[in-house]
Amino acid sequence: MRNPRPLRILVLAALAAVAFMAWQVVTLPKSELAGFSRLQQYRFESLPLGAPKALVLERLGIPRSEAPTCNLPQRQGFEEAFRRAEASGATKFLLWINGMNWFYCVGFDAQDRVVFTGEGQS
Image (tube, rainbow, N blue to C red; front, top):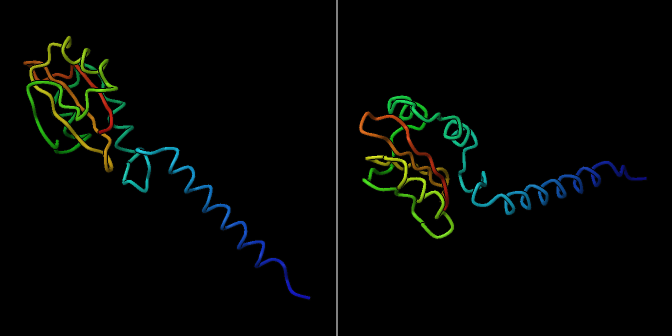
């Protein structure tokens, strides 16, 4: 009689792979398969208003771009973030990307202190 254990292990591995792929599809664009970093997300979320620019750069690294207005790549669906950015008094905005298409925008006042944070996808 054959040992059923290898077949059981194979079935469990296949089910685990299917569950992982389904989870990745559900979490898009925050998928590890798309290069999304949960550590970078935590670092962004933990930025307090009033933090100095040096702390932001230390936590998030070199930004992708700088602009005088909120530079999230898509306004549609993120109108509330753009309204908050315009009301924040920020004089410049830096943009970072996480994974393939998740973006973080941080606005700074004239003293290089955080007055706005926003995130979204393209």
